[in-house]
Length: 511
Image (cartoon, rainbow, N blue to C red; front, side, top):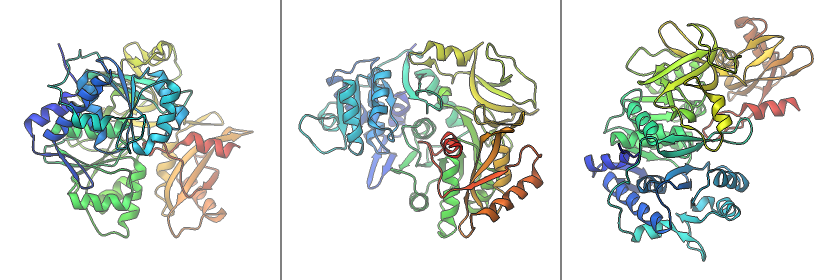
């Protein structure tokens, strides 16, 4: 049996050759053109010595060169290692070495750290969208002169397609090994449900393509359906409103911070795009934001749950069943979710409904393991399940709620406090635009609950508002849960997908 993730693009190019696949500024590429470019990249990569089974790193932003190089490498039979474009040279070097990459494809804006990292790691550097310089190899120029490869190289379903590096909340990042089967199935299942993609949909591609949400749920699922992706270099709420309106975007995928910023922008911009549905992931979406977005844009946000290690989708709210705000819906087709006793490290002990424990997953979406880390793999792949590290609960109808990360939970005086519950309460206060709840060291209780708040414009941050928020929480939460400390910020430290970096907040507040 043979298959390839490259078929996601190839099949749509056969079925809808003249339909626009990618729109980026004034550039408009049909499926036929994009697939031809990808096959030219495959030929050019082969000419530089890349062979089936090799690993090709991509340090490329949200531009057409990303899908060209991505599907070109896959068509050649190589595995793709997308690199976070926010990384510094030494961090990129680590990925290149850890994944034993055969080449780094780097676009112009990232040539500084990319060139340094490639030189240190002894990895050939291939450039795209970059000025010609002596000693550099312009992959896009080579591709432009190359004959397109005939098709994609057949691979076994269990062969490596992608190595996606986790954010490394503890220790150094690990490379999750995703196979052609796991990603192709996740894309195909996701296209049908929950994302309900149709060939005439238009997706705003505002999530970074190096990240699993933007790359697999966004780009690959869109291409699988033969729909159109309108690419943004980076997310800006005002520009996103204009772009979605101009291009008639029907689908939006984003993280909670994006939806909060879109609501802020909509307060002064009357434009409303023809959105049919929106999807949120990456971190918990406060229910008040979901409700306000539906009121302002006339479009429902469906919240879901996934991980890099699960290709990535695990569960989602969707049209196939009643949406339950505050939950992440039900597991997708072919995937099972259980709740296991979190304290037990040596095996999986499943709990009953309505009991809080660690979310465990099994199905076609689970990774093959962490690259070169058998011990770390054994810690999370256990008894046929993948241990997520997230705390959750399944209700009697099979809806999953994510309570928090195991490591984000605050232990105050022996009681477990789940930050999301406190955040949901605080988000209903009219002065709160965004909030993150963390635990800070306390001499008596071990940890104290601290709310870090970005106030709404017109609100006055300070002791008076802080006391008001404490009182608001105390009226709505058990005595051990409400925050005794409130801090105000202008902006939050964000990860590559827009997720608030709580560990950085904790470090700041604990100093």
